[in-house]
Image (cartoon, rainbow, N blue to C red; front, side):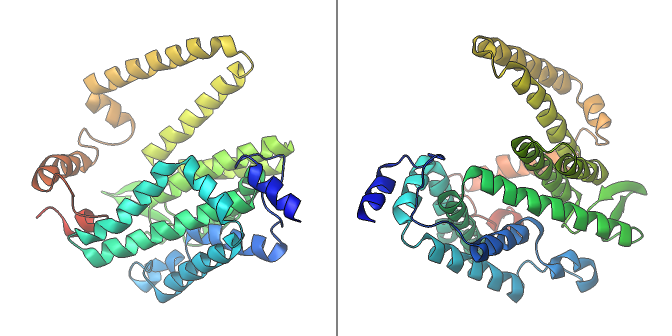
Length: 327
């Protein structure tokens, strides 16, 4: 046993071909981790039904209790494997710095209680991520995420079909025009981003296990959710992922063409950016927006010009600016 422990200590932190710990996750741990990821991705039933409860439920006692339980479970699961967790954290030191900065920003926040709560949520998410990295292989993580987004896609479609006449849940309108699906999420953009991530991990899992029907079908379902959400950002991200995947598959075995491919992509990106910048009204019109990005541009100007000029060094603290506004 001592020799095995020494062998584990000497391994590189992300060596997938050798054991990094002395025991593997059992069915109970896998079930809890799956439930954790599902709640992170889709929330809890009260949040799915917030149209009926008249308000956000993200601060409910149920949600807070679940996050505390997830945190405790991750701490228990990492017990005995902290040396591996530390090596994993050192692999992305900036991530730990940003999480810590968000937490300590409560000290100068305009809304310390809200910023402190947001910082705690980030810490719980960070520890959960370390739990996944230490206890599961990358293939297992992708498989868990695939199941999370496959079941979530089915649940979203079920809610959209069941409540298609309720503007507050599935189909919302802006100025009399169809805005898009929101399913069980907070808004159409959230559903669109989730659909993009679900599409990506499902495609990766399908290629890994060489599934040519079931998982590609779930990938297509996530793509349908992205299209139905009518989120311009999500649709652009989905198109970009598909385009980059074609480039990757076409050139992955030709290392001598990597440089040429990157240069070509940079030229195309620069050209498209220049065309969009010089024809902003027409470009945004293609996305169903106006040149102010549906009022977002003035908010960005206020945030980065007036907000930064008033508190240039410390800012407002995480959560403090958007909930309190520029003083």
